[in-house]
Length: 94
Image (cartoon, rainbow, N blue to C red; front, side):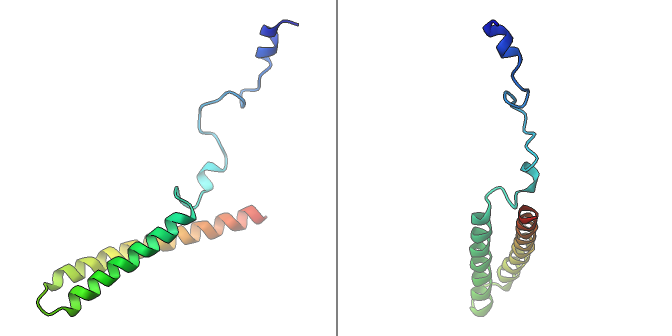
């Protein structure tokens, strides 16, 4: 058998560059659990900044409310990431 015939028997899955990995869409986040931790820290930081601006008398209150709005968006995304991570763990165990 020639080496050319052996090359023809290579499975298409061995030499593909397309992202057809079935586990690809199941990741909790692109950053994984580190992203959840980083977003938690970011949420707490933005919340702290909002409280500081709300408590300080000479600072404008609209900055505090904008910080709270950003914190709510971060919290919603954080909950989404946690739920996806929990679902992925349940699928991996099954």
